[in-house]
Length: 297
Image (cartoon, rainbow, N blue to C red):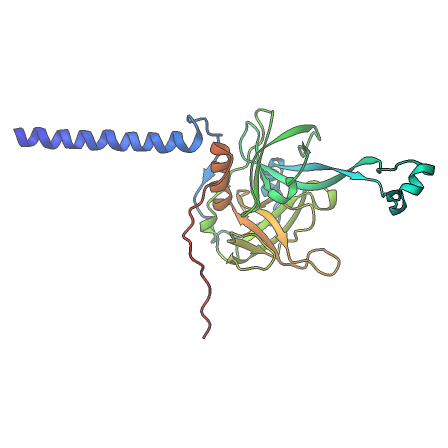
């Protein structure tokens, strides 16, 4: 009887410890359990289904979640000061000219994806980097909202914004680990300021890394769905309208346009970064202190 009591006590203690650890990680990750209501579907697409004659139902499902982002960066500059004003002889006749200060506003266009009904938006970091003012315009009513930067992560080119709105059309997140080369994907965004533009292609490759000029942490989805300037931060969705990636970069042609090689951050990686940014404002990463490189023959 005593052994039975000890066994039951041990099981009860283990159960309590498991609950405590679960609660700790839950609250530590999200900050008192106030996580946004994000919908995730981990099942893969049905690859045996016959394709229909139109992707209109997919677009109707996903497009309302894609927004336009307008960022403004204020640059303070000083007028050119002629070198002869450095000479005291000229100053006694013409006075001192220290150069008049003026400001210039740089504007940029990009895209974003609503991931929760209460206003959390995923986008690319380079769309909002160094921005002094960010406006978000919804696709249908064109109403503009002032956006707050919750956090940015330049190494993965992911940023999270928040607008003060409720009951927004949040997109459903897929499991990007279920993607296969050859899956059909749609890119939705704001290329060249043309809002709610949809292009189609396939997943050309997975796990793209070691690309020169790109971010430090690379695990890109490569696609031939046309992605152009302004698409950055927009949605890459599967044939069920679920978010599989955040469009981030292209290999441009001589005119800076698309030539069939675009890249998106997998949503699994973007979601991981987003959770850390929402809970703590930054992503903490371990550092091994070693350098890895490929071994040639």
